[in-house]
Image (cartoon, rainbow, N blue to C red; front, side):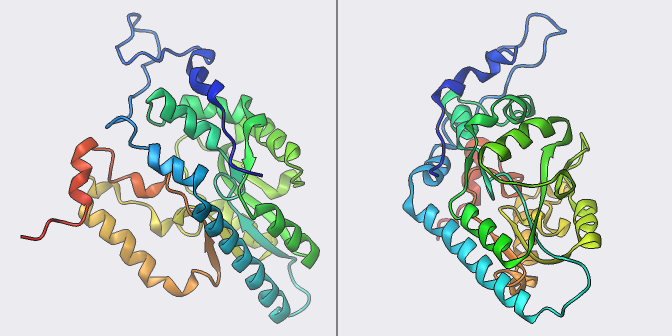
Length: 279
């Protein structure tokens, strides 16, 4: 299935009862307006790459082909008995395709807002698609006898919407293997990773964000005033674990959003993060 599009979501904010105006609300009790994207259309190429580039699809298929090969190897080398084998996967931009949501933000000139994402999870499940290669891999894992466990930061309160999206896409998963986020303040998956490892022999981890694998990759908020140091620290953490990528950890591309954007968001000042001009 190709990445989905949904022009009708431009006014999702209005449908949710929020004002899309950049001006402050007249009523002090009204919710704050949505933040405008700065600079305008900074997300356009990132989302166009994921929606239009054959290279993006190739990266996804490559990642899932590698995941299938690694799973076969690990199952073959695994001793019998013990806990049942499993693969742990993230959902959004790993299995589920939310191109419609990202397109809505870009068309509306908006930055990310949790209120809009909350509505997307709850109400717009029919517009969610599949990431290239995901279905084939899940079928391969099933045929090989490995369980699929999903650890997602989709909200537990919107489980029904997430369940509806999975059902529509014919991804069968019982509730005890769909580990959503019950916290309103944290996106840390450590506890749920431990929960999965207690019940299953986890052979492979698949995600589109480094924090899908380990919390060590979280951007250090204390370095917000020194973004170069924060960026360098995450790169160093990746290099330290470089042998795990393609072996135990399979990562898919995501240019639209993620932890990598944490030191950015400064408008045109983000140009400073590009390779400096040689003097």
